[in-house]
Image (cartoon, rainbow, N blue to C red; front, top):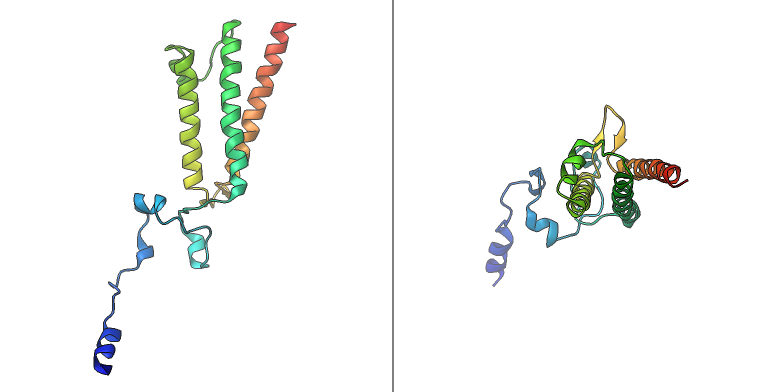
Amino acid sequence: MGEHTQDICLFDRRSGKDRRSRGVPAIKSLFIYARRKNIRRQDDKLKMIYFDQYSPALLTPIVLILLLSVIDAFLTLFLIDCGAREINPVMAYFLKFGPFTFIGAKYFLTCYSVIVLLIFNNLYFRKLRIHTRSLFSCAVAMFVMVISWELFLMFRILL
């Protein structure tokens, strides 16, 4: 019985490949395992790491971005009804198909952008010296500025 136990201990189940060497995680790992929350190793801080679980602090800017995007869409439609025109060529294209297509496309493109930012939220742009996660705040600030401008135009039209 002692020899049999020794044989099992000598059996190495490792394949010799480093599981961390893959650049992009398998799709199933994004939904099933969901264990990575942060970077633990100092060497990994210089690499692009994908997480399965994200900080709850990211929820607020994500919800704000999506909400502000919808508000922007409705204010844009109101201003267009009052004689303004859409200067964003991508959104002007979707506006040709009607207001529902316009709002749907705007919401889809915003959701897609938020998902991309979320996936790459750990990326650090060395030349710009910024983390991708700081772009969430920038997006919120830009939407607030656009909505402020639209409200200014709206009140100018109404008064």
